[in-house]
Length: 219
Image 1 (cartoon, rainbow, N blue to C red):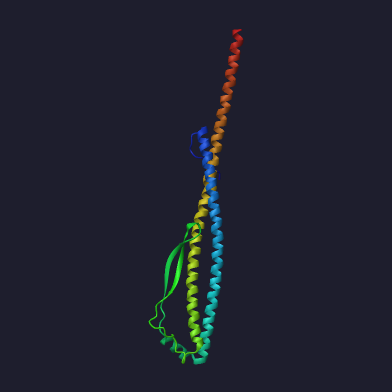
Image 2 (tube, rainbow, N blue to C red):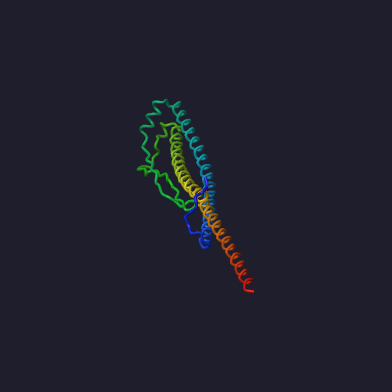
């Protein structure tokens, strides 16, 4: 579908203004394209980090389950459950903030915070608790840290994707609407000006011929 031209006065001054607008639009589109390419590169980097973080998370969870199953085999499932229930509760929290990322985009930052413990004693009685149960608890805490990190990376990826979508819409609007509309208007003005020039040229030739005829008659 051909682009619709703008409603303008077909003058040389307007033609110059239209060409400047087109040049400016092309420059803006190029800048937005470079920003888009930077965002895509950053997105790929964060996706790689997210995949690595997810793999580490699954690894820690597998290690935690393996240690817990070993503890159950040593003490029995009922004893392992009782030891887990009587252990002091360890409180965790996640503090959120933002930092300046690519192109000034605010990136989310999630900080994993362990609550202050009233006592420095171990959570489990070393004499009564198998080492594997404490290892399982440690691996679970490490898993939670990776979960928080993965959530942070996911939030950042979402923010990058939203900005990529905005940049693409802006580029498409300039390249497929504004520039074609300017091109159509420029062609229209050029055609009108060319037609005016042809008409003026015809008038000049007619006047020159009439003047020549008058000069011949007066001789």
